[in-house]
Image (cartoon, rainbow, N blue to C red):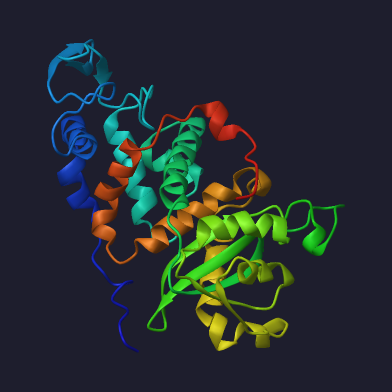
Length: 318
């Protein structure tokens, strides 16, 4: 069997990570580079000159133009955090470099946090992934399918009517017969009304869509996309249709990773973030070593997110 170059890439080893990001000073230097790669820019007026000072243990920059003061993490996802930067960076490393996933309970043990802090950091980082991926539509040859997360609850409805099932659209961008990028977007339903805004966001103008004949997917034809329908049978035979082979493999891996890592989570409340984490990592799988610095840049460009915002029941839909 030929060796899969993506799976066998070296990535970023733990010793190399500790060598690069093992101290708070190293982490701070990485954040400065990620936030101001061309030198300081005032977040209020855009001026390029500032005076630096410390207050307690925090480092501040005061703009020489408008006198606005900012810390390294203010206005970013890490704002108001009291955790050492080394713990943040270790959490980033574990979430981005794991081949499958890491649960908040395991993150708690490995980073040395309370369970609540570990859960909060994990969801903050997944939210940064979600925001980073939200505005990146798929191009060219795109295969789409309807899918569900979750199962029936004891005493509840069975099948697709289960209250614990979350519908989402799975889509893969193909190139030369291989999957390149994916999107997993929760939707209210597979009606025209729900799928039209999904298509607006998920499909680029040059997308050529292949679906399995689900009625709701006809909306892409009505929106002017080139649309091919390939009828897939039920059961195992339907999973082996060549047009959807890679999409079915990706969906199988997604559900295996989720169920293998998390015994349970509130699908309706948090599915958008768990799906976004898988999507983010899959779309950057070609270069695992660069995922940490790239994600640090994403975090510096993500607005603060309070615990209330993290725990608020998201409106499913696109």
